[in-house]
Image (cartoon, rainbow, N blue to C red; front, side):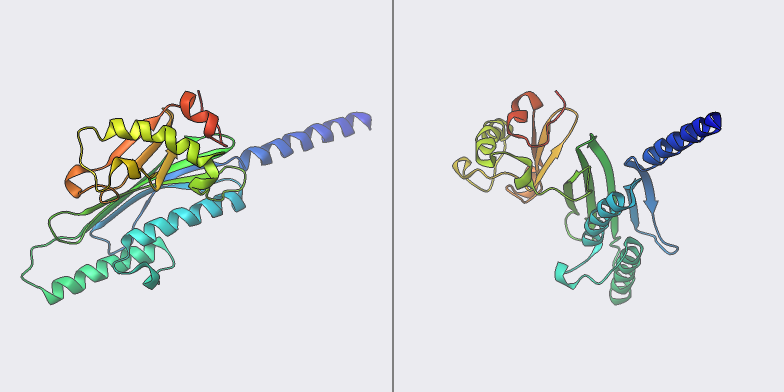
Length: 240
């Protein structure tokens, strides 16, 4: 009887640990498309594991992709899924060709995402979107999404730092070096942090999207602050 209880105890322990392993947060790359898709290519990471955490993260990723495929004001978004957004984008293009049959313009949208940093406390994702619906050039957007690994909730930039103003002073020194040979739309004395701040293996990356602070011709402006410099200001520590 005692031997049977011992075996049962071992079985329960293995089962418990297997369940914990199954709930470990991980990501798989998924290509998303629809049956009649001809101009949209989407490759994004999808979180798997704990359903509450993974669903929360995936909801944020979906929101970004839907927003990028939407044409017009964001408050008018009606799509509920990425697949619906792909179909809507293709319909918009079909309607455009119907209205302008002599046009040689080809629309296309490419959205790629990747996990750029992951620890037990924080996960950082990068989503790059390029959408071309005519004009001299398409629109390039980069998004950094930081998530609390324990909850799956997105972390606002302000909640990454103990003292964001102190960090801002450090970041400005790296920013000044990054724009030495570039033109920006504001004076260096009016420095502001970018929308995109993300963890990478090399350090904390700050990226200004096209048009955020500079003309299109300048391109992206970005720089990385090593963790040995940034960690004193970070609530979620990076790898040194």
